[in-house]
Amino acid sequence: MAFLDFINNRNASQQQSVAPTRQQQPAPQPSVESLPANVKAQAVEAARPAAQLMEKATTPSPTPPVPPAPTQPARGRGLGMER
Image 1: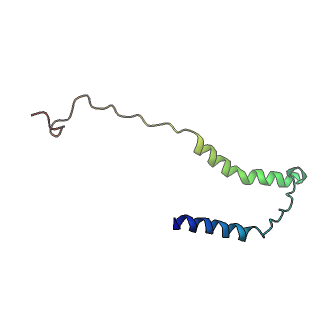
Image 2 (image 1 turned 90 degrees about the vertical axis):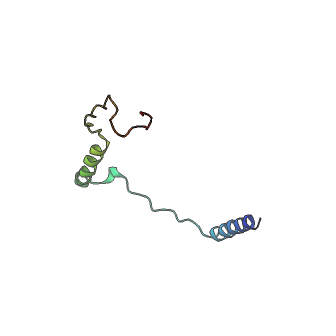
Image 3 (image 1 turned 120 degrees about the horizontal axis):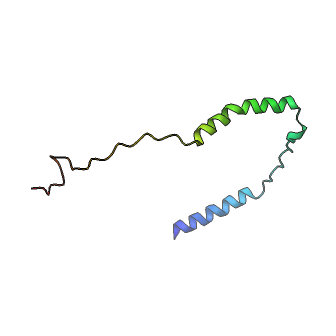
C-alpha cells in the first residue's frame, strides 16, 4: 500500500512541476519550394550515399546453397538406444 501512495504522490508532484511551464512554439520551417535549385541539387547529391546504403540493406541477398542432410545416422554417438 505504501508503494501505491509513493507512486501517486510522485505522479502528482510531477504534474504540478510540469503544469506552470509553457511550451514554446517552434519557428516555422522554410518550405523546400522556396530553396534555390542549386541547394536542392546539393541536397540530392549529399543524400545519394545514404540512399545507396538503404537500397543495399533492403535488397535480399542470394543465400548460399544448403548442403543436403545425411540420410543415415552417424555411427558412434546416437541417441543411446542402438544397443
